[in-house]
Length: 226
Image 1 (tube, rainbow, N blue to C red):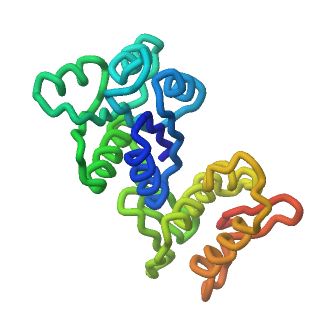
Image 2: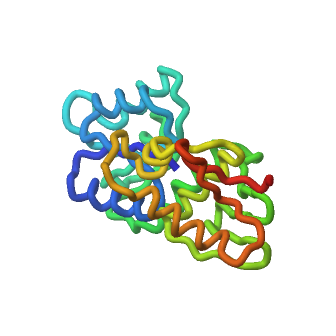
């Protein structure tokens, strides 16, 4: 998922961003309502995580109300130390979709984000991807080729998911850097090549037909076609 975190507490921001990135998600963050509004209006996000108590004139609830008035329907999870029932009601009435009180368990945060993302996509949500005999389950985050399970690290799963969503298309290094690593510049490293090599070993080793190909001077392609 691509997520936006609007949170002014640096410790909470570091904790949440680190955990979400380790889980394979892309995260942008802002520490005030003005920057949060700009990012929310500039980029498409699967879910917005909103701290209720923000510095400056635009607090969390005001930002949510402004986004809803502007027609933004991205699911919003409110984070707040205010746990009273009346406060939770205010948050939900302002346009929030869920409310999580601080301190919180990171596992619960992940579960709520997954639920909001599924809910926003409706009952027809795509829960799996297939290319030839390779299949990934987007809910359990497991991959199988034929009858063999494939153990993937979070970044490898995200890389494979992106390639499968673009099966049959040439995917460039720049596309992978931007969408899998969230780099909007060339880090001058071989991180893409290293991960592609590891992924190829996992999904193609010992199989008669390779699925992951290198397209010379262009990028990579995942395809079951000859």
